[in-house]
Amino acid sequence: MVTEQFRVPGVSCQHCVQAVRKEVGALDGVSQVEVDLTSKIVTVVHDDEVDITEIVMAIKEAGYDDVTPLGIAC
Image (cartoon, rainbow, N blue to C red; front, top):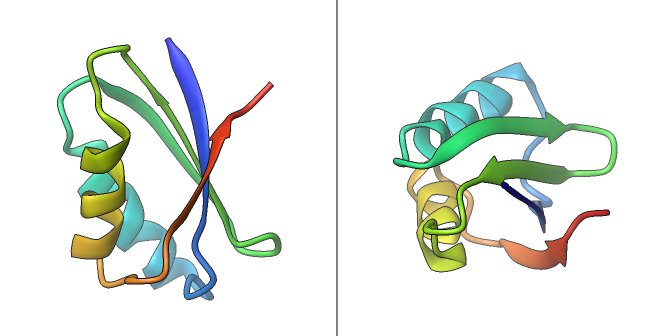
């Protein structure tokens, strides 16, 4: 399993959290999605087969165009 983080400045409320969790969580191979509203960081735990581009596109599909991959979390 891989844990990656993404900065998403537009997330600001529980509706945002649910939208991102729904879109990213629907990807095959994603096992966990956490959204921290304070830091604006989305943390995704997924299989090696999930491409980072798929995650970025899912976040954008949730309505957030400003997505910055931060890399693998420790």
